[in-house]
Length: 92
Image 1: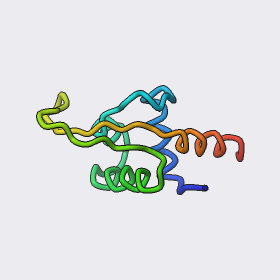
Image 2: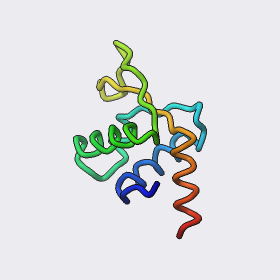
Image 3: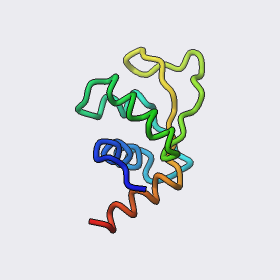
Image 4: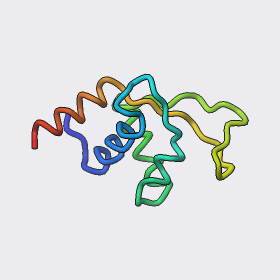
C-alpha cells in the first residue's frame, strides 16, 4: 500500500519515537507537538493511520496527562506500519 506523503511523515515520526519497536508506546500529544501542522490536522492523520492499520491507538486512561496537562492516548506502530516504511525506503 502506498500512503500519502503527510501520512508517511507522521508514520516515520512515530517509528522514530518508538525506536521501530511495535511494543513501545508514544504519547499522541508528543507526535502532535513534533509535527509542524495544526494539531487538529495531525490528529486527523493519526486516526487515518489507525484506520488503515499502520498504527494502534490505545484506549484513553483516565488521569493520564502529559507535561502540559493534556490528556493523551498511547500509540504503537504496527508490523504493517514498519513494512510500509521499509517498502517506501526501498521504492525510492
